Length: 383
Ligand SMILES: Cc1cc2nc3c(=O)[nH]c(=O)nc-3n(C[C@H](O)[C@H](O)[C@H](O)COP(=O)(O)OP(=O)(O)OC[C@H]3O[C@@H](n4cnc5c(N)ncnc54)[C@H](O)[C@@H]3O)c2cc1C
Image (cartoon, rainbow, N blue to C red):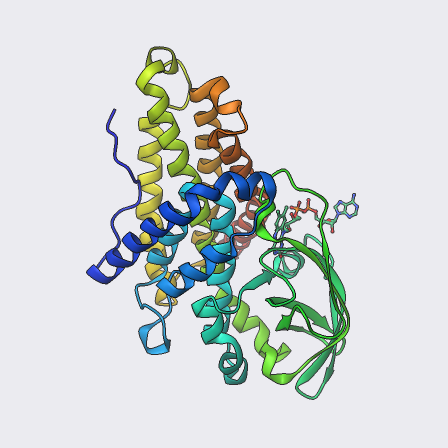
């Protein structure tokens, strides 16, 4: 079988290639040696995140005129992939941080951007995105957990979010709440703000190094310069950030896929004579990953230019979840008992693959939203 080291096509342009190479080198020297510790001892890779931020690892998709690298979303996804190839958990943190940078960049409110954007972009201020509950609420899956009372352009917020990653006392969290007088508000909350309590979650089966905490807010005052979108701005704003937020996650999947393909290749060196009887062969998975990358690149370009259809983004994110599960599962079946050892990454990747499929939007959530959009399109056609 052919043995390329990567399924993602080289990023376009010299600058993007140089950045990816720098990320690769950083991953090799600073992340690969601690990936087991991250998984098994819950080490939060804060030093790695800071170094990645200094390199521009969270700002690839932000236009150069706004302090970013200006390489587009596909390059940001390629960076997340490079990280995820060694550690899916840290790839999730890269997605959290780069997504928060994008939220701030796209906010219609200058004040919040002035306050937080450049620090989040550079990784000086680490930030979690606690949007799962709001996104699921808007898809008709669960009730909203945060409630806000408006006082002119400020808000007083209470409620709790069960699990938000990449947060801490010296971090930021970007969350959304239902406003008493109607609509929703999206805002940035500091972990050390008065009325905020952070509590540890019960132990997870994976992703333990993501500093995922329970956030409780009790009458927390959110000043106007921490508001990303007021109720009258919320709907248009969410529409503008959602494609990038959802598509950006496929980098976690590609990382796990590439790591799993590596395991398959390594295993075939000695056991191809028996591995050939497995359902999902390396060549087929690799071809599927390359096709998915081509689609991702095209769609990322449409997201960059504001022309992506949300249905296409949801379908691609779903395909990425499915292929990640399939490839991580096949890697385990290829490598066999060796991969069942805690020191082998194959079992960790299987747990990371499951996370790709359960983090919001989860596989079931994607199918629900896709079903609703397809149904609406059919009804519109019939009318
Ligand atoms: C390691 C980890 C990290 C995460 N990081 C983040 C993050 O950074 N930001 C973020 O926003 N989210 C985060 N999440 C949350 C994640 O994105 C999902 O939303 C969450 O896992 C719940 O989704 P679900 O599909 O399992 O819920 P569903 O199965 O869809 O359940 C829907 C909801 O119904 C309710 N419900 C269902 N059954 C019951 C019941 N028996 N009793 C009471 N209530 C019930 C609950 O409110 C539940 O959330 C993280 C989760 C994990 C595991």
